[in-house]
Length: 126
Image 1 (cartoon, rainbow, N blue to C red):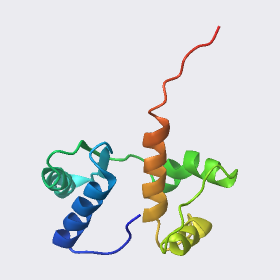
Image 2 (cartoon, one colour):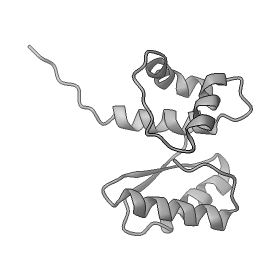
Image 3 (cartoon, rainbow, N blue to C red):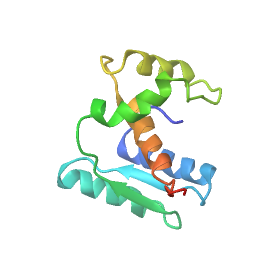
Image 4 (spheres, rainbow, N blue to C red):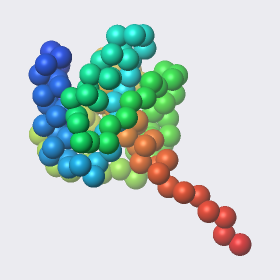
């Protein structure tokens, strides 16, 4: 988990550092903000990560709606965190969502959750 407010150059360096730490077997998803600036920013991040499987996606709908499937799992206890110095702020943002000032960590976690569960393949069992 990386959390902060950075300028473009520093943000790209942190994304690259995190990609190397996670390894090349990890698929990287980049959120594409609306408008041409968002598209250029996502493409810039992808260009910054040669050799990694990197994809961009433009989310639709509001953050609260997108977070609903994830929040259901959190609320029934199907969620755990690796211990880290970021845990307190992460939990606090979740605790007050959607009424918190910041929503980016919940939005990012909900997006990651969606990518993880969409990998499963449903099969009919007779």
